[in-house]
Length: 383
Ligand code: AMP
Image (cartoon, rainbow, N blue to C red; front, side, top):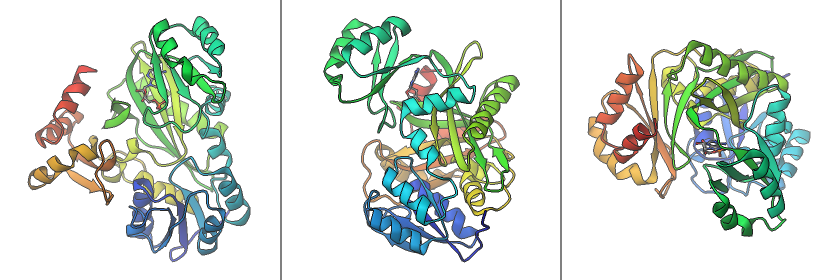
C-alpha cells in the first residue's frame, strides 16, 4: 500500500461534476490532478492541472493518464473493461476493477448484495417474452423491468402494472438484451448510505440520507433521514456488510428502500461518491470527496460527524433561469454550479445545500428560495 503525498498526481477517469468535486478536495490537500474526458473544458478539466481529451474507452489515452498519475480513480462505473484491466496492470488503481465489473450489471450487483446477506426485492432474469411471462407469474404485478446494463436515472426501465403493459414492451424482448424483472417495492422512503474504506483497511460511513426523486432523478436529500434509530442502525449495518463482503477500497453508495413496516431492501450500488452525498461538503466534518481522496491515497479517514441537519437540492437545466433570480436572496444557502456549457433539460447543472437547526428549518429555507415550486409540491404529494 502506498501513501500518496501532496505534490503527487491523482488521475481521474471522467470529467463530470463528481470528478470536479473530487479534484477540488484533492487540490485543497495539495495534490495535482489529471483528468481523462472527451469534452473540452469539462467540469473537472476547469479545476485540473492536466486534461487528456480522449474517449473513455481509448486505451492509449488511459495509458497516458497512467503515465502522469501516481494513483488513479474514477467518477463513473461504466469504465470500459479493457481500460480498467489495463490500468490495473500498468498503474496504481487501489480500488481495483472487480467492483466496476459487479456494478456494471444489475444481475451481478444483486448477486453480490445477496452474497453479503443483504435483502433485495425479489427478481428474475428476463431475455425472452416467455421469460417475462413466467417471471411475472412468480413475482406478480406491479413490477419493474430494467435493462441489466447502461441504465441510469430510470432510463431503460418499464413499470408493469397489468398484462397490457407487458404486451407494450414485448418488442424490446427480442432475445438480444438481458433484463431483470423486479418486484415493485411499495416503499415509504428511499435512503442511501455512503461507506468508505481506505487502502489501510479503515472504514467509515456517512449519516443516512433520505432521498426524494422526481421522474427517477434525485430531487432532494434530507439528512438526517426522518426514520427511527433502529432503522438508521439497520441501514448503516447493511452498507457495512456489503463493503466488507466485496472487500471495498474507496467509496460505495448503497441505495435502499424502506417499507412502512420497517423492512429494508438494497436497490443499487454506486462505486464512487454519490449525488446523495453532496450534502457532506458543508454538513459533515469531512466531505465524501475528501474522504474518497484520503481513502485511495492511504491517508487516515476523517470524521463523518454531521455538523448540522441539511437539505441538498439538485439544480437541473430547467432550473437555471430561476437560479439567476434567486442569487441575490441566497442568504446562507450554499450554491454549487458545475461549469457545464449547456443547460439541457434534466441535466445536473449544480446543487444547493442549506443547513438548519432542524431538517424542517432547512426545508423551509429551501422553499423560500423560490427556485423549485412544482417540484416541492410533487415531493410533498408523494410523501
Ligand atoms: P434505479 O435506477 O434502480 O435506481 O431506479 C430509479 C428509481 O426508480 C428508484 O430511485 C426508485 O424511485 C424507482 N424504483 C426502481 N426500482 C424500484 C422497485 N423495485 N420498487 C419501487 N421503486 C423502484
